[in-house]
Length: 211
Image (cartoon, rainbow, N blue to C red; front, side, top):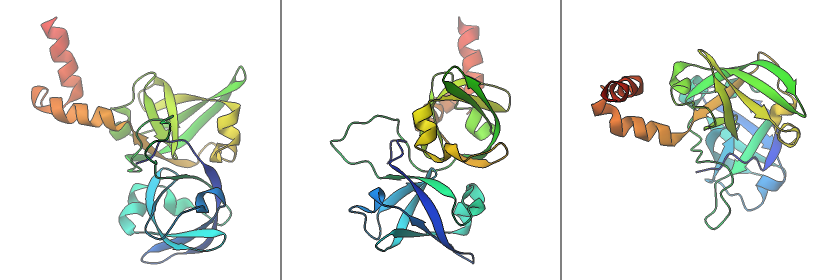
C-alpha cells in the first residue's frame, strides 16, 4: 500500500525488452533500506524489486502489466515517480494507493491558473465512474484532488512544488499516464451493486426517485 506522495524522481536505465520487460531505475533516497522482493510504486504501478545495486533498482514487468499500464512507453533517461511501501506509524498525507492501475490516460491540456496549473487528463469510463469533484485520484503515482469531471476527462490543480518534485516537470501534451481511482469508491459500488443492478448511476436514480 502507498500514499501517493512521491519520495523521489528516478531515471530509467538499462532497458531490456523481451518476453519480460526488464529495466533499471537510477535512484538514491528510495534505495535506502530497499531489498530484493520489496514493493516500490513506479509511476503508479506496484512492482517487485528484482535486483539492487549501488545506484539502481531493477524490475521486471510481465506482459499483463504492459497491457494495463504505460510502462512500455518508458525510454532511457525518462523520469519516473518513486515511492516505497507505506510504513506503519508514519503520517498518512495522501490517500490509499494500491499501485493497481485502472486505466491509461493522456495529458490533454495544461494551462496556468494564478500560481498553479490546471492539468486535464483524458480517461476511460473505468476511471471516470469513480472520479468526483474534490475526490482523490492517482496520476502516475501522485495523489491528487479532482477539480472537475467531464464526459471523457478530468482536471486537477498542480502546485509549483508538485510539478518540480515529480515527473510532471517533463510531461507534455499527448503523453500517457497511469491512472488509479480511489479504492473506496470501488468497494462502495461493489457493496451497493445488488441494490442498483451493479451500476452506481442506477443507484443514484433510485435514490432520486425515492425522494
